[in-house]
Image: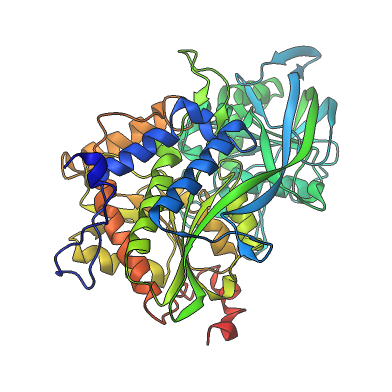
Length: 550
């Protein structure tokens, strides 16, 4: 039987050594789907581009072929395959100009080289900043519950803050922010939000590879292209006018020109007694126009309706989008194909949908949600979670898949971040039936919990995890797994070289999807409601709707 025919027939099932029959997943089909989604024809799957149309049509076609039913918005009394997501689209027009003035001398800065500035999302259509004072605000944290305030009442009106990435604990590994594990205060998104709350004209984040967890190429590619945001009533309440990053060496130079020692002030910023410091004699200038418009992107939604309690929902999610077409790399390649990130998760979503569609109907409904604009700030999932098609109060859990390993099997698995919740306990128990061990996030300092779509659900109280492939490879062990991960982050993450490879076996994904299927199947055939741990910051939000789950 040829492979095309073999992949078209119903899924085969494992021997009944597990708690329930679990389908096998075809690595060849996974490979074909990742290859298609990450091909140049899809133009990097950028939202509001021809690549979106192709990606959405492809996912809908695959959902249909898998046997799913449409689970999207209701139009004329019928469910469609999509949920429209209105987004603000913002783009710098032409070439922006940036410069520093140091002791009266102008120092030009080049977008993408020393600095990476995002298109303004505060409502500005013309940014005209001239000789704005620069103020170092440490880690830019205002956390009353931790008795921490980096701002100390400083007036930032008309000024640009300069801020360090990650938390004050990052370098020491201990303190008020949980040590190496990043809190939301360490995320660059928080730094910009806090800048807006403090009334700053702008905020420049100093890039360093270790605390950011990625190199300058990722910063450049993610910030100098088209930006998106959900449509907001008061955008200036969330965004300062200027949002950008600067290279570490430029920061050192700026501080030196002001007679300051960057390294010494960075040390001070790791203490509660830190006070903001003005960079005397150094100012910042920027000029550029911004094209802003509202566009509509699409979440794609498939569904298997529950047989007994269809109003209770288990969600599997993955983002279909990537960075589209952007700046050329050294080889002249401008298409950011996004094979690992996140054609792998999208293919996994399709195949999980196929498995559930071919199995007996579960008691609860199961939704397969392919979200847009994750790369623009988790926007598709944020829109779904705040405008849910199925109530979040009766959503059992979100199981997210983002950037899975398309290579060989591992002996372990992980999740993004260090969340504590019953959903993880259930996954660990399932993993044991496959002789798979759970490994806590090996790099909690990267803030992975806040960087994928499950976070949007967590903020609404829904128990949510983002599955991560293991690093203890059957072939090569942890050394090989760690080396493989570092190579991807350094050479391919958010770069045009994230392309499908014929050498990828997809054996690891095919293996791990059985675990994820079993986890969702158990939840869908039970009346259990997993909960956050008692000390979780998300538990209180979940408890607000407890009465609706009785």
